[in-house]
Image (cartoon, rainbow, N blue to C red; front, side, top):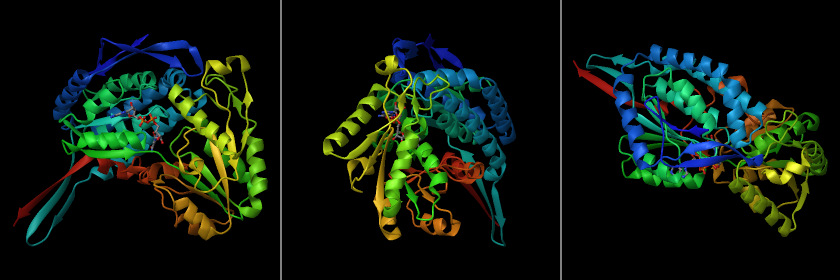
Length: 477
Ligand code: NAD
C-alpha cells in the first residue's frame, strides 16, 4: 500500500517511497510512505496560504461545527485508524484506541472553551474607545513525533483551525500512516488546503521551519531537534511552540499507602513501554520504605506480558524503532557495566518472535546516585531508577535539579501535605496521587513544561493564545 502526501485535499504521489515495517514483526512490511522534499513543502504551504485567505473569514461557530462533525467521523473510524497506527508505532492497540477517544474528548473540550477564548475585549472612557481582536496567524507548521501521534496531532490541529489558521503537518517517519488516515478523514470536512500533510524527516522539517509563509511552528519532539527548529525559524523570525521531553520525578511521602501507590507508579512509568513524554522517569522513596517499595515494584513489573502490540493479552509492546531499541539497549548495557543494581523483569509472550521485533524487558534500578546518568536522562523506554531520600528538603532538591520540567507527582494519604510539596516543584504540571490528568485537569490544565521541556502550552483555554495575533484598535474621541 502506497501512502501519499495530502495537499489541497488531494493525494500527491512522490518519486520515492520509504518502506514502513512493523516494529513487533520486523519481517513484515506494512506499506510505503511517500517521501516529500522541499518542493512538496512549498506546494503544501502555498495551498495552506491560499486556503487561509478564505478560511479566516469563516465564522467561529462554523469552524467549530465542522471540527465537531469531523470528530464524529473520527470516532466512527477509530478501529481502523488505531489498527494502522499501532502496527506502525508498536504501541498496544488498546492504548491507541484510548488515544483516539481522548483526542475526540479534547476536541469537544476545546469547542466548549473556544467562544469565550475568542471574545474581543471592548473598553471605553471619556478619551477613547478600545477593541482588542484575536486574529488567526496564517499557516502553522505542525511537526509531531511517533509515540502518541494521533492525540499529539489533534491537540495541535483542533485549536489551530478553530482559531482560523491553516496547517501543514509533518508526522514522524515512524508513525505516518495512521496520521494520514486520521487527517484524510478530517480534511474532507474542511475546504481544500486547510489541512495538508507532507511526509519526510529532517529535510522536509527544515524546509517547513524555514518557509517564509509559515507563521508559527508547533513542534512536539526531542530537545536537540527543537534546537534545530528554533535556528531554522530564526531567519524569518517565526514564533515557536515546543512540547519537549521530560524527566518526571515521582515523590512518595512517608504517609503514602503503598498498596494503592505502587501499581499506579508502575503504570505511570511503563505505559507505552515507557515511551511517553510525561512518563515517571525517577521515583524518590523515604529511606525506611525503600526496600519494601523496590520489591513491590519488581513484583508488579515482572507480571508484564511483553508481546506484539495487536495481541490482546500483551500488556507491554515493543519499542518503536531500531533507533529506540539500540539507544535503550545501550543505556541498559552501560548500567550493567557500571555495576548498578538492576533487576530485569517481565514475561516473553512469544519467545520465538522475540528477535523479530524490538522487544525489551523492563528494568528496575536501585542504589543509584541521584546524579547518575540513568536518573538525569530522559530514558524514554522501560527503565526506572528508584532513589532513596532522607528528608523532604533533600527530595525537593533532587526533583528540581534538572534542566527539564514537564510533569511530576507527589504521593501521600494527606492532601495538604502533598500540596505543600507540590507547590515547591519546578514543573509545568504536578499530579497528586496519580501521574496524569483527571478529566477536569485534562480540560483546564495547560499541558506542557518549563525550562528545557517546552515553550508554550497545549490543551485548556490557554492553547488558543499560541495560535492568535492580537489586533488592538483605538479610537480617539
Ligand atoms: P524527534 O525530535 O526525533 O522527532 C520529532 C519530529 O521532528 C519528527 O517528526 C521528526 O521527523 C522531526 N524532525 C527531525 N529533524 C527535524 C528537523 N531538523 N527539523 C524539523 N523537524 C525535524 O522526537 P521523537 O523521537 O519523534 O519523539 C520523542 C521525543 O518527543 C521525546 O523527547 C519525548 O519526550 C518528546 N515528546 C514530548 C511530548 C510533549 O507533549 N511534551 C509528547 C510526546 C513526545
